Length: 90
Image 1 (cartoon, one colour):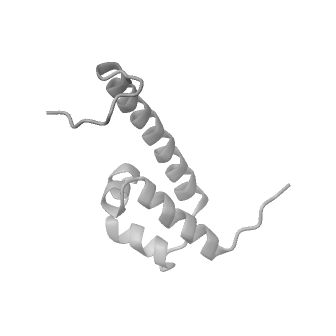
Image 2 (cartoon, rainbow, N blue to C red):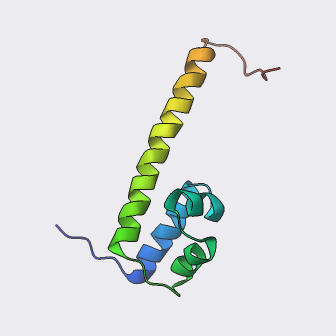
Image 3 (tube, rainbow, N blue to C red):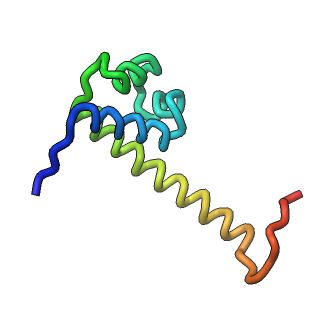
């Protein structure tokens, strides 16, 4: 089964991925691409390439690993307590 995506679909999805990565500035750092270029990809001034989309997928996977490690660290430092109310950390 093959999926058919329009260029607009791909641009919209790339824009969503940029937001998941933390916005244009963070995506620019993670993808090693100028912020202006990121914006130009999103608005259609530059064409999206297979390499760009694969690099974006790789950056998202790295983010998942980093976020999981950060969450695990929190869970270790602050194990969940059943029925405990949410209280701020001082």
